[in-house]
Each structure stands twice: as structure tokens, then as C-alpha cells.
Length: 263
Length: 263
Image (cartoon, rainbow over all chains, first blue to last red; front, side):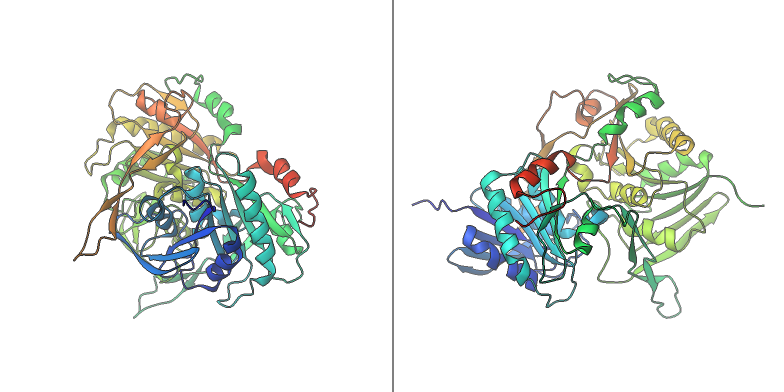
């Protein structure tokens, strides 16, 4: 008899052994059949990177009723591409990334390997959700997020998501969650991004670090505000990055019609 | 006397020795002072990836009047972050990525290291442009693109770009360019993405490959159509990926107000 439970493909960027992905699997298991294809080591800050200069390898870690786990030498995006094309016999009903150790709110969505997982699912027409928590510790407490992860995933399994739209869900690091808030991506930028680490007299070695400066700290619509105020921030996210609002002005500047013209 | 020429920061993902970046530098030099910080080897498909697990190193390659070139061990995004925080004495007036060997049209913007350069500039409030050509060859002919690169960069230097908007410019591989067309990002997805390359009996090794399937091949508004028809495709691109159009529906589904509510 065919297995009709929802098929949920899970990955992350902290690696297959992280506490966050174990918590995610636990919260999602009641909802369907889980297949995990996750990086074999941490790949934080991978964005949507692909592995193009060497082959990618995967390996079965464990298989039990309702759960199959693979680890992969590639990026989070590679993991989704590889699982869809190799180990899965049908398209997943849901792609889930996380739970990331560290938030992926604001403009950090662009650097996030967790959201790389989600964007890859979304680009392939699969309802996709990323979960992250504002705590980088290896033993962060994911329990308060459990019911939300379950309920948000169940809602998306039931109702789907519009084409080209996925969800970026971030949890504040508290057990006193106030509820959910649908948010815009906070605007801001990183400063003081490099820490010098000279090597044998060469001063040009640096570790990436930095602090994020919020450009609209009082904007109650954005995900940073929601997180700072104890809400679970749900930022609906599009993979169509066309700046539609600038098209006419750009045509005017270039002196071209919608048909295209000499410049 | 202070140097008042525009400061243009250049990077790419094909690496500092690629023909595409040499062409780009040549086309841009009349417009200002050029500083290059580019990867020391190819980093295609880097997206907005960051280097987080090891230090990043840069090294001076050459310095002449109007042009300084550094190579960097990091990703394209690292290159922009590092240049802004170390070798540049002021913010650049323009960030330019490319010219990429291979197009970055359609949804491929998400995987593109060239656009990783551009998104990083844009996130920091700097007018930013990515240039790519539909030809992967190491010796692709960039000459037909020259006047367009110059003129588009000059326009952006003069007029700027709106906040959170950058440009993704793709050239068809032809010397018979018909002019420019302002486009939407074509929608589509990759198929047949992996090529098996077994190693010593292990069948789980794969090279990333694939072919792109356009979901709207007849849509004259999109960048794929423009490229297929001989136009330079200019896709204005936003780094605010909030799916504004789905926010109200999502609130309705979650039963929450704009203030946020129990779920």
C-alpha cells in the first residue's frame, strides 16, 4: 500500500548533528514521513551557494519507521537539490530548514543557509518554511518553539503557499512567547565586520564578525521589532526579486519603451 | 589634492584572473578610480555565501594610476565586505560585479556569486550593478558589451538607484545587440541536476549540472525572452524580499491582527 502521509524534506546549515535539526525533526514527525538530507558539517552563511568545483557525496545515517536521515558533503542548497533528484521517489509536500542556531531575520535572509534550503524548495514549487532562533548556542532551548513549528507546518501542509512565496520564521530566545506576528524584513546593515588575525607577520588575515545596525529600530512592522518584543516573527518571503516599482522609472532613464530600445 | 573621481569597487565570482573582470575594468576605467577585490580562484554559484569557518586573506596584486587590484581567499560577498572595511578609505560610489562568464538571468540570481557582489553593495546603500554574458567560455567575446557597460554604469553614477534596488544586467552572446530591455526575472527551475560520478564502487557521488526549464517561455516581459531575442536584459532587483502581497492573507490564516496574536 502506498504511503499517503505527507513527505517532509528537512535540511539546515548547522549540520546533521546539530541540536536544532533534531528538535525540528521531533516537532515535525507527527505530521508526516520525514527525510533529512543535511550537511555533514556546519555550513553557516552559505546563502544559496552551490558546489560546482567538486562532486557532492551523500551517505545514509539512519533509517527507521517514518524517518530517514542522510548526510551530505554539499551546501544546504545542494542538499535539497540532491535529495529531490536521488533519494526521494516523489516531490516532497513540504521543505523545512532549521531550526537554525541564530536568527535569520532582517536582511540576513540573504546570507542564510537555512533560507537557502527554503528558497530552493520554493523555486521548485514546494511549500517551504525556515525556522531559526535568536540563540547561537549549541545547546539552545528549542522547546518553546515546538508547538509553533508544528502548527505553522501543519497550516502550510493543509493550505499550501502562493507560488514563489516561502516563510521565514524566527523565534526570540524566550520561553514566554507572546504569539505570532506577520512581519516585513527589517532593513539594516552590518558594521565592524572583520577582526584582524595576523599570521606570521602578515596583517591581511581577518575573521568575519560584526554587529547589525537596524535602520528602523522603531518600526513595529518589521521582524526585528517582533523578536525584540517577544513575538514569533513570520516574514513571508518572495523568490521573485524583480524590483517592479522601479521598472517604469528605469525605462524613462534609458529612454526605452516596454518593447526595448536603443540606448 | 583630494581625488574626486568616482570610486568604483569591482569584484566577480570567476576569479581575479578571468577575462570577464579584465574586460569590465577596461570598460569602467574612463569613469573613475577602480579598486578590484576579487576571489583568487573561481567561486561560481557562491550566491551571497560568507566565509565563517576560517579567516579570509587578501593580497595586493598590482597598483597603477587609477587602478588597484587585490585578490582574496573569500567569497564574492566577502570581497565586498573586506574591501569596504580594509583597503578603501571611503565608501565606493559604485559596486560592480562581473562580467560573469555565463548568464545570471531568471531565478539564477539566487545562486549567482556575481549578484552576491551586487546584493552586498546594495545592502550597504551603494548603487550596485551586475553584468553577465550568455557564454561560459573562458575566452568569451565581451567587446560588444563594452559601450553598454560604460553607459549603464555612467547613468547609475550620475543618477543613483533607489534604496534596496540594484541592477542585474545580462548580455546575449552576439555582436548584434538590439538595444536594452527592462525586464522581469524569468520564472523557471532546473531539471536533471546531477550527473553520477561513482568512486571506488560508491554510487553516491554526483556532479552538479542540469538544464533550466523556463515556465513562461512566451512571456515577452522577462529577461530570458529579451536575451533570446538579442536584447541586453536589465532586471531591476530588490533586496527587500518581503512578500508584501501575502501578508494579509497570512494574517487571516493565522487569525492574527497586524499587532500580532496568539496562534
